[in-house]
Image 1 (cartoon, rainbow, N blue to C red):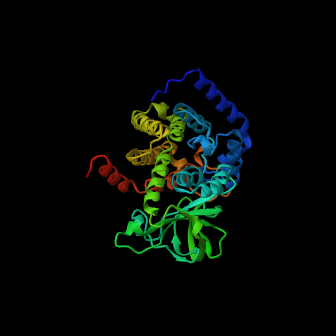
Image 2 (cartoon, rainbow, N blue to C red):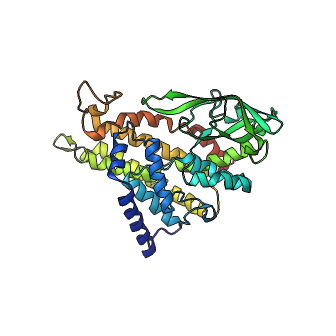
Image 3 (spheres, one colour):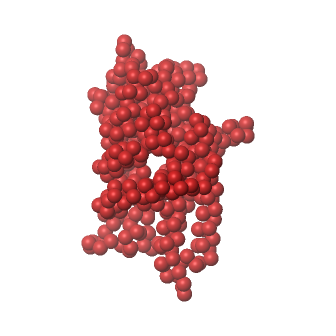
Length: 398
C-alpha cells in the first residue's frame, strides 16, 4: 500500500476540489448548517448524489463494469478526505454500499440489470429491514415470516429501527422462510417494494428529537419469488457479507478528522483563564489522545481499503473499524459538549428561548442533538460487544 501522492494523484485532488467548489453550493451548505443535528434532508441528498452521479463519482467502491469510476486506493482516500474536509453530505449507504454489493455477489444477471442502474442514479431509495423488536444483536432470532404460496411469498412481521424508511422506495429484508433447529439456516434475503399493499411505516422519534428511524409492519405482503436474492436459506450468509461492508463504512474516518480539526480551531478561540481552551493541559491531552487513536484507526481503514481494491473482502478488520470508529465518534461529540460548556446544555426543539435569537454561537446549536444521536452508533450495525466476539473468533480463534 503506497499513499505517497504522485503528480496524477495531485491532479486528481485538484479535480475533486474544483468539483466541490462548483457543485457543493453555498445554499446547500446553509441548508445543512440549519438542520437540527447536521443531517441532510432527502432533497439535499438527492441533489448532491445526482451531481456525483453525473460526474461519475457516486460509487467509488463499485467495479467499473457496474458503473464505478475505477479509482485507485490512493484516489479513494483523496476523494473521501476532500469530501469530508468540505463538509459535504455523505452518500446514503443503503443502496450504494449495502444492497448493491449483495446484488453484485449473489444476484442473478437479471436482478443486477433491474436494480443496480437505479441505485447508481439515486432514482430509487433503499432501507434495511434487519432488526426486529425482539431481535437486534441476536439477529438470527428474527421472526418475520415469508410463506411461499405459488409464485410469491406472503410476508408477515415487524422490523424496527429502520433508518429512512419514511423515504424509501424499496427495502431489503431478512425473513424466515423455514423453521429449523439451527435458527440461522431458515433465513432468506428478500427485496420488497415499499408501495406494496400491507406495508405500514410508523415514525420513532429519537432522543435528539429527530425522525430518522421507523417501525415497519408487514401484513400479508405479497412479494414475487423473483425478488429472492440467492437461494432460500442463504440469507444468513448474505447478511454477514452485507454487514462487513456496512461496518467498514460506519467508522467515517475522514469525517472524524474534520470534526477533530474543528475542535482544535474552535477551542483556540474560547477564552479559558488567562489563555484559550486549546492551551489547557487537560483538554489538550484529551485532544492529543483522540488524535492518536484516530490516526491508528485511519491506517487500519487504509489497509482494509487496499485489500478490498485488490479483490478481497473486509474481514475482522470491519469489526475493528466499527468499534474504534464509533468510539471516536462518541468521544469527539463528548469533547464538543465539554468545550462549549453551558452553551451546549440547552436543547430545545427549535433552538430558541422565546426570541428569534439562537442560544450561543451558531456552531453550538447542533452539539447536543449530535451528542445524543451518537449514543446509538456503538449499537447499530451489530453492537460493539458483539463485534469483540467476532474479532475473538476470527483472529484469536476463541
